[in-house]
Amino acid sequence: MSVALENSIYISDKAKEKVHQLMKDAGVGEDSSYFVRVGVVGGGCSGLSYKLDFDNETKPMDQAFEDNGIKIVTDLKSFLYLVNTTLDFSDGLNGKGFYFSNPNASRTCGCGESFAV
Image (cartoon, rainbow, N blue to C red):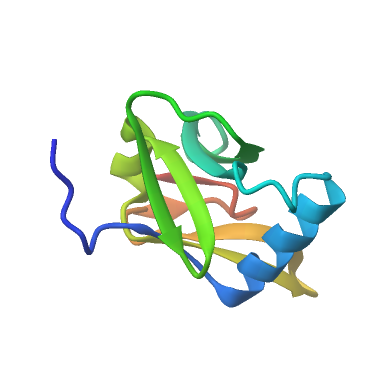
């Protein structure tokens, strides 16, 4: 399967700063083999939930992207839900943490951690 070049996963400047800080805190900030793994799993109040972690092992069907100096990897199935999504970070009064700005989601839940297509 071929994916058009403009189809990607993006990361905002705020999320980039937080990822760098968390990787440093986890002791993997200097290890260039580590990347951000994003995925979609069943569950949550809207049916699908986001998964976010650090990893250093790719799998055969993984899709890899780089945006804003951050390597982002996802499995092919998750990528179908995440195409053109932006990983962002909020530290505002309404909630603190990573969130996904996903143009493919038809609805999201109140907590922002799950979605439906």
